[in-house]
Length: 144
Image (cartoon, rainbow, N blue to C red):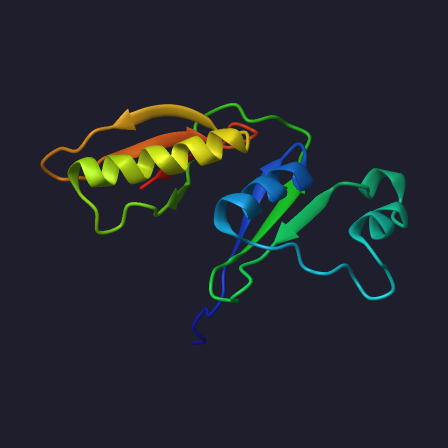
């Protein structure tokens, strides 16, 4: 049996390019070049049938290490809490006030990008503190 060597994370959303550009800024990802024969992604999009325009967008880790993120337009809106979420690891190895400082600094940067702060989960006997947030379309993620 072959082992899986790569994974892509797919987001259902209303505005794929907007959400992709948010996550690109969060993670330092880049938008790959447009398909051959197109100078820009806008040129490619305009060449598609009207119902397919703006239907998908992607971004990738420029180092090739992290998973590709793919964003696809779906007709229904987000209704309930995510069953899966991303943890953006900004406090790895930090504890106490130093960890909280790192989480708060990253939170401020992401709020400026359009994220929403939801709540701080403070450290307990099992876990260090983390911040629950939402992206530009309300998908939950954690600053961990």
